[in-house]
Every structure is written in C-alpha cells, then in structure tokens.
Image (cartoon, rainbow, N blue to C red; front, side, top):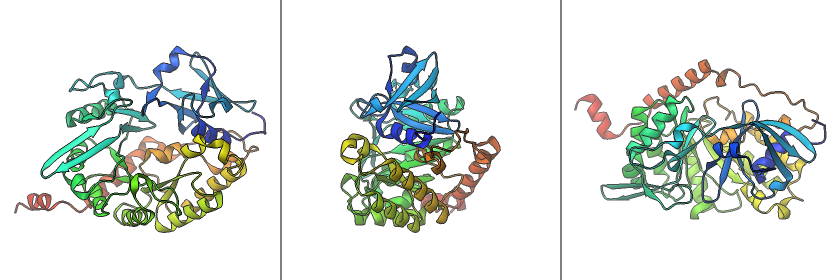
Length: 389
C-alpha cells in the first residue's frame, strides 16, 4: 500500500458507506447475512483480529470496491488496494429450529456473538409475550426452545462465546420481569455464555437492575449526543438518568453509549465522549447518519477530524479506566479500530489479539463473569429456595 490513505480511513468508510462488489459473485452469497429489510451484511476481516460489519452496496459504496476472486478478497479505495477476508455465514443458520422457523430468521453471527433479531416485549398481568422480527418479515412469537436450539448449535459449531439481544422500544420493569426475565434465565441456565443487551433507555431505570439480576452481562444504551434527545422517544434527561443507573448496576467497562455521529459537531462529540467517560460509560460511534447524509457532513467530518475523534475516544477510555478485557458487547469489536491505524505512515501490521483473545484468556474471562453472577442480587423467591425457607 502507498502512504496516501490509512487503514483506519478505509475501515471508517466501510462502516459508513459499505462496499460495492465489482461483479456479482455466487460464492459471496454464502457469506451474506441479513439484519433488516433490504440490509445485506458481511463480516469482513480487514486485518487479523479486526472484524467489521460491512453493508453490501449501500450508500456511497462506489468509493469502496470489493473484489472477490475465488474467495480471495481485496478492498479498492481511492486507488489503493487493501487485503481482506470474509467470514462465511455458518452452516448451522441454514437449518431449521424446532418450531419450523429457519434459524436465520432468529439470529445471525458476528465475531464471537450470536445476535438475535429485534425483540418486542409485552406483559399484561402474569402473561408474557416475546416477539421476534425476522429480516423483512412481520413479527412472530419467539419460542424459547428455538432460542436454546440455535444457541446450542452455535456453541457446538464453536462459533460464539456470547449472545446479544436487542429491542427497539422502551420497556417497563414489568415487561423485563415477566417477558424478558424468563428468556434470560433460560439462556443462563443452559449455556455458559456472555449475554449482552442493546436497547433504548427503559421507562423506569429500575428495569436495569432487573436486567442485570436476570443475567445480562453488558448493556448498550444509545443516545444521539449531549444536545439531542435519545432514540425512541426518550428525552436526554431520561437517557442520562438511565446511563447513570446502568454504570452503578453493571460492572465497570460494560456500559456502552453509542453516539450517532453527525448529530453534533466533531468538537461537541469529543466533549460528549469525555462526559460519558467521566460518568463511567464508554462511548461507541454509530456512523449510519454520516453515511446517509455524507454530502452534507463531509466538509465538517474530515479525515483529520475522524482520526482525532478515534484518538480522543481511546485516550478517554484509558483515562477513565473503562477498558476491560472482558467487556462483552459486539459493537466494541466492530469499532475496535486502533487510533494509530489512521496514520498513513503507520506500518500495516497484523493486529495481535494478545492474551485476552487466546483460549486461556477467554477462560479467565468466563471465570470472572461466573464470579460476578454469583454476587448478583437474586430474586426473593430464589433466595428463599436456596435457604430452604
């Protein structure tokens, strides 16, 4: 590669705009996974241990071309070529769950996570109802046996160490208790996996206590920025209150606050990153808005500003001591672009996973999670049962 463009710049454009195939390739269809209506995603390994979720042929993808030749992948960006590798869609997702629903209608994979499609939770009295929304389809009832089936299949295939659940509406403590709690307990009772949740700020911050108590190991609470309201109808004050409660309830370094880049100026975004770090929450960077309105933002969000933001985020995480090797959330993997990679003069050397990416390191991670789970506040009925009262 030449010194004109950095690997970090390429990664940012892939996250922001996706990549366009130079020609239709039948092999690549075996790697595409779906996340929503019209969304076709690839898990791209741009550098060993550096995984990105990349949309296929969306937005300003003409700036980034992907050439596939008999499973050999190259990324063309601004006249330069960067080697890459595509992680194929696992075969177990092509099979059927016990209810007859295709496993791919329940979840997809990324890095070492099984990511379930969006859930909706409803609780009326003692009735629980959990729905799941397959890509491009209407919501259907979620069978817990199906969840256990696809999770077990992913573990047997040695593809995952964690499960990610997400829902798009603000929930109440009652909905968590009646609808989501049994699902979390079923996963935790049957499998030794990390459980991550991604959701808007709940209607009552007490729902966060229930989520952690029922088995969630990490949580992602998106906000737009410190000058804008949060997604799905939550006000900024409500979002900040939820984050303040989350950093008390969840272990340090396991609370994420994704920022929608483009809602604030680069300088204001850096201030937001610092404020979140001082609260104990780790900012994550959501590039979707920049991709959708790139012509509007491109003169403000220059390559220099983007590199500055990534450097600032890395410094603030280190300053607040939020970096933990067991931080369990898939978004942290997709945004793990090292700040040095934005320097065009930096050598393009493979990233090393280090001890925490090794098998012994992962065993330490799981032992730490098991220990934290034993120390959680349990439900009253569980406490009475264990004490034989």
